[in-house]
Each structure stands twice: as structure tokens, then as C-alpha cells.
Length: 51
Image (spheres, rainbow, N blue to C red):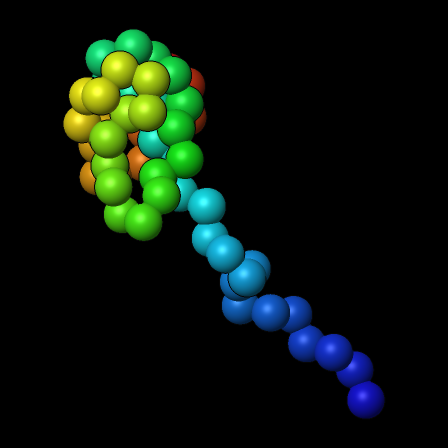
């Protein structure tokens, strides 16, 4: 008997970079607001560096 690979982890972490202050955030409970400056965070992934 072998163990299969799980489809995900216990808790998925959602990250976004704030377009206002540039800080990286973990989105908690679907609240897309920067904890550093209060700006809205984008719904789409934006953490990878541009270019």
C-alpha cells in the first residue's frame, strides 16, 4: 500500500503585493486589503517580478 500525493495542503496561503506600498501580504479570510497601508489588493496574482 502506498500513499498518494495530496491535491493540496491543509491551508492554502494566498499572497498579493500591494500596488500602493509594494509590501507583500498574505490574504486572510478573503480580505484583500493591505495590512501595511490599507490599500485594496488586486484579485489576481501579482507577486512575480515584472519582466
